[in-house]
Image 1: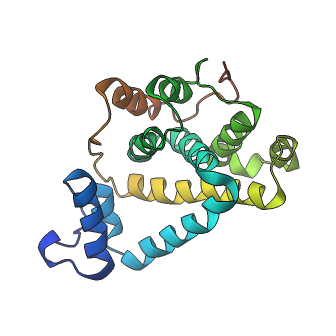
Image 2: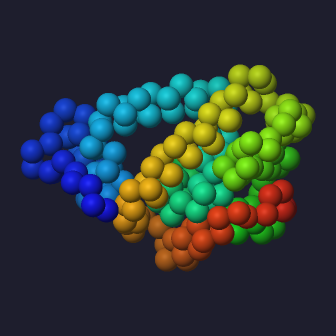
Amino acid sequence: MIVTTPALDTATGHVADMYSADLREDGLVYGHTRAMAVNPEAHQAFETLVRAIVPSIGLRTYELATLGAARAIGSQHCLLAHGRKTLRAGLFDEDELAHLVRDEPGSGLDDADLAVLEFAEKLSTDAAAMTDADAQRLRDAGFSDRQIVDIALAAGVRNYFSRALQALAVPVDDVPGLSPAIATALREAAQRTTPPVGDISGG
């Protein structure tokens, strides 16, 4: 990454808050945090947008949309970070998460979960080809108008964040707290930038 990022020892305001959060949580400041700290106002706006999305759909659906989009984009940064978040929140165990990102049976997903993943993946790979039929699958799974919009926003905001990191060639840091097996599964999932959609069994 050729961009010069704010120094840790002179950081103030929101940048200092960003750095402190990483240090408090994991004892290091991530490369993606340093990159976003170059424009702290944009990072604050990103956080505000996320906070406006999550309440209507809940954390599980938000994280499913995030993981689906991150996998489709091939974002190691976001698969590692949000893989850990899903584990810490108790949304999945390691085996279920590995099955999810590998598109294998055993992920424990229901039809609504699969609809969210498919929508997020298609938005991330071929949004121009999407039609009302794509949103209709979400409606058929029981999501409201507000929730359908917020699922689209959740996938869209992940594209914004992940693609910016990729475009800046931000190094991918190891994420503490992940076992070697799940870290490998998450990293390998990012190598499949156009995964097959709808093949994950709810078993």
